[in-house]
Image (tube, rainbow over all chains, first blue to last red; front, side, top):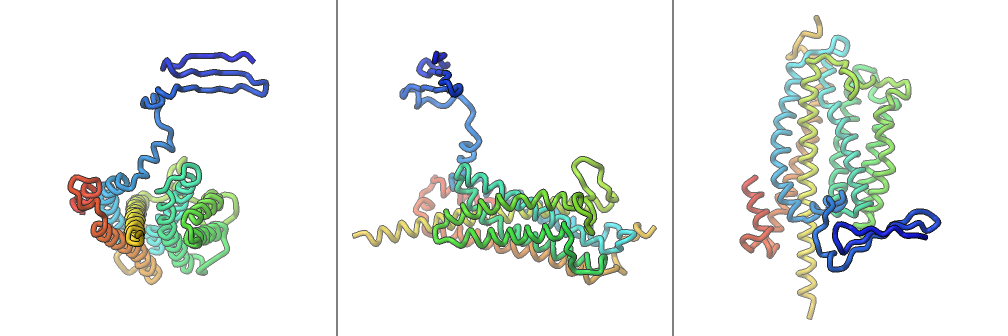
Length: 291
Length: 71
């Protein structure tokens, strides 16, 4: 083995590359005195994310962002729903029942987006042990379940006059129902352990396994012959919807999305503060118990 | 020209539409009120027991001042 020894930019850092016979290896030797120097390279993603794990910093940042989510979210939702209910045109086939779409479609989008957020938080929790990701995942669950229930209920209210049935075992409907049960399972699982960390880990694994349902929901209308109509809005093609219906739908979807984010952020802030309160009360109790 | 007819009324399928809009308003409203009430309650409890909150210029005091000004 003939090592290739190179000096790093710092005179105290040495990079040794060698071939051990099984493959190339690399050793980066840094002198202890240079370890205190600030790192030259950009911080890794996990490390930069941990800057937001500081509760004080998170509360400051989220406190500044929250009004910018809640107020426009509320305004856009009110505008979008009023526009959709009173001013958007009726459909030539569906009549006024098409107005249910202005609630159903944003709720369906947020049901999937919420679960995607849950899966991202689960990755952050399992890979980087990010403490805020655990709290955010716990708080996304009930809100996502609520919007999934809203999507199912409004879909059912649309299905009765249009299809003549409250429910059909269609691939799209069934996969969204599975998503609803995944949310419920996550809510139950994270609260099922005496030790919260075990619950967070189990919930994160469930959320990641359940994420396979998201592409099934998205492509169910393409993969199977479903009663549910295919997507009217896609990333790659032009929307197949009349522009007079598209704008109120876009406004309502944006408003609901901002509201969803505001609700999750407010719940996460409350959870961070409650954790701090528990810590302080326990410290106080242990001080009083000490002789 | 049916598609150019605007609401309001007479509206077809109005009970289904009314129920959908009631749910569409209620669900975010209930979640929103619950979240902001819980957050306000936690903030008040924390301010009452957090020793750092009483120190002027501390991170907790600054956070509280930011929250108060935002509210």
